[in-house]
Length: 169
Image (cartoon, rainbow, N blue to C red; front, side):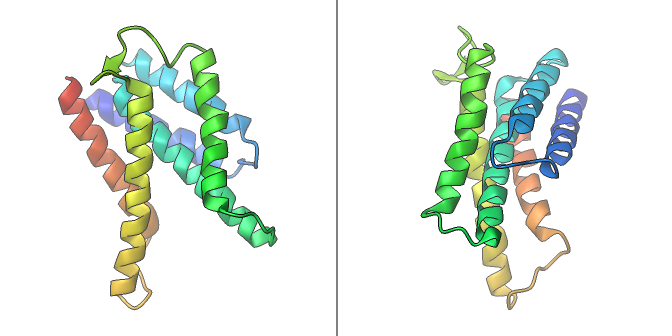
């Protein structure tokens, strides 16, 4: 359990360090994800658990980029999908080339653990974004709790991490 908490903390630190430095093409994010994956492997966290946070980081960074594009006034069709797709392209292939994805035997349910966790983490993060928006509509456009927009996705990612920790232990 302590390893899981350390991994979550390390991923949050890596995320916070890259958010303010993120650019449209974000090599810093890719390096942070690779470093986080390496550190989590070193302390014994399963790749599916780490992948959940990789997916959350990718989706969060992609949505941040879409918001930035919108603030610039650029007319990009499907800017959220394009931005998230770009971040997947900037993160997943380098992880494959550096042999962090595609390792023989590193699968769960027949799928690479990092990829499985990444997809699940992205879906869960997106669910957290939708839940935040829905809760705001039920409260007259206001949040129920300060930092609700951050708390909900992080809580859901943490919950999913715990579930995958139990599955893989």
